[in-house]
Image (cartoon, rainbow, N blue to C red):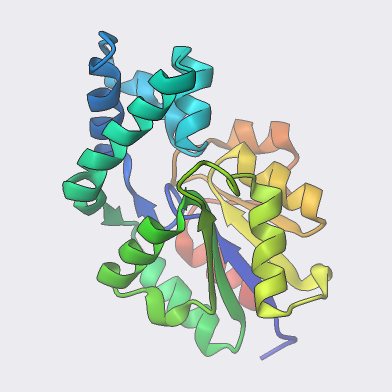
Length: 217
């Protein structure tokens, strides 16, 4: 084993394919305001940012309407959407391998902390994680830079030259760069190689196994 590293993971699109539940709940929230999503692929863009950002930025909701859309989303998500996910191939082996090598593992997700914690719990991955950082229910703490910084503060890891942020969208890459840590984009999630190249990702990999090899190597 080499020097101890700290590996921070995004959740949606990096550990789990959560698209079915997320899209179902976005559609539910939008329908309340007479907004119909005609093509399911339209909702690909909402996966990654916070609920408040997506409902406002992509659908123009604000004020009380924005709060109501988020409330409706969470109402259905807590009941049904949270369970509509699948772990990507090789993710559990990747996490276990990195942990067995003695590295610190953290979660830095824009998903609310309470929901992220619940998902890690019922998926069986939670014991591998040293720190879990998610956003607050009011939409605060949804900036990737803040999430990464908070993770490092909580686990007491100060050598940023040995910290890696692993994610599937440009938000993860930009957050890693702002925090001064290594950025690693995975193409099997919701993002693309082109997106990572444009964002300036330091590493781009195509599988969970490649993530483990890069960290351990």
